[in-house]
Image 1: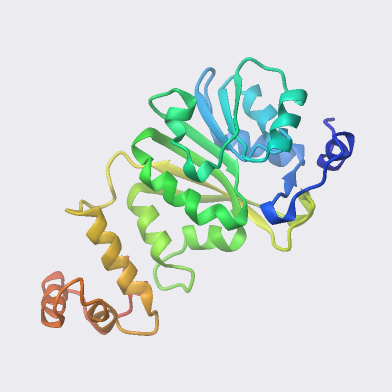
Image 2: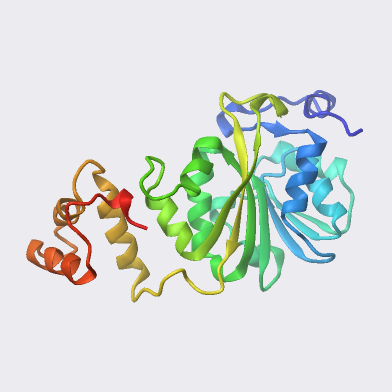
Length: 262
């Protein structure tokens, strides 16, 4: 059995950095399930976000994949280099929010796996959106609340901007929960593992991604308002009469709220 996160930290004279959102997963059954969910093939390039002490890294390497681990904490990068000596592991000291994942791995297309710090979850998800043409899939550990948002159905309170934008380009599925007790130190909330599989084509064809995002953002900006009033509130989209006419052409009742629309 591998050493626990607490044991490795003590051996290297380190502690988890709370301000960096460091919560290390050491449960081997959970780690194996995450690696299995990525469905990696031998020599396939995979980018691991936030490898920390290398517990998941070992399971990714066991699949035969080529792993590029992006770690912004120099202490953790130092631990990784000492703990894992495998020619298929490349360690990049950087902030994942600022990295081109495929370029970092030196590949045309990559899989992405990671235990995301809670405060960086949304920025990283939007980076995945930006780079989707070169990402085949992503298996991510996120806060339970975020997993609910990513997989929410229309009509639910969790359904929102991120749900809609991600669903346009990814098939999103919640795989399994991870209780807080499995982490060191345990966070205040439970987590879940989600998988984002990149669609071959967007769920619907759109003329302008930028305008699509602006319309969806305006629709959800004031959830208690009707869709018509929410869209009218953003005068940069169109004049109120044009908004009303567009809804009529689309066959959408303006008194509905954005969260009720697929």
